[in-house]
Length: 345
Image (tube, rainbow, N blue to C red; front, side, top):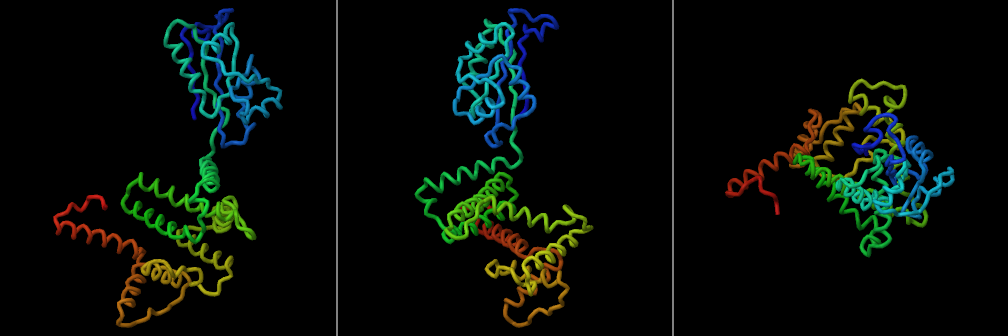
């Protein structure tokens, strides 16, 4: 959120030093805050404006900032003045700070704009002063709050379990991959949100476990700790010159954390076959194991060998096959006389 101010052409600031008189129209400061930041954590310019104000108004008696402002010695009047009343309150060079509600006082600002547009009222100087800003990731707090309410009040969501939602996690992951492959930025943003929803939903359900509950904060805290531990070249003193160095350290640290006796442990066998084959080949290669591929006439062994060869060459066989399949699909559609670029129904 930026900072702007509208200075009336006939205001003292516009007419030069020493122009302030009893007819000085004064100043209105609209103070906005983010509900995603703890109340009371205001910027220094905001505190300066509050302490220098002739009066501080707030239309919401339950505004979360009010207890902190009053504790700091700021007298706040609970009032919802009209635009004209606010202009009159500023007459004589007075400064009035309005602590905005969550909506930003649109009725008041619209009224002030109408007065200014009429040309019949000498307007005070108008300022919008952000008192607190959202930090990166702050909207995740909104998602957690929305999920809490949906879990409590929605007849469908309140009955869901980890097991019942599992299929949606798989579906959303595939839809995300499809959006990436299609290069559709809007679709990518939406599908990332759907995947994120699965994380938040499962974390909310996990809070209700009678014996081993955990929350979204536990989930986030765990992955933060893991990322820091597995990136000593970023957060510590170790060096990594190439992506291969990073990957080797990641796998070594992961094996130590999991106390695994085999590089194959932790590989989900339920993933698509080509991806599974490539993952096994990658683990063996990174571990320096020279394991001959099993031979046989079965098509499965042929596909295994192709997947291992693709992985060794730096190609994801699953992605490569999906790309080839899309090309084949388009060829089939052209043979049918159908536009290959049309959306699937």
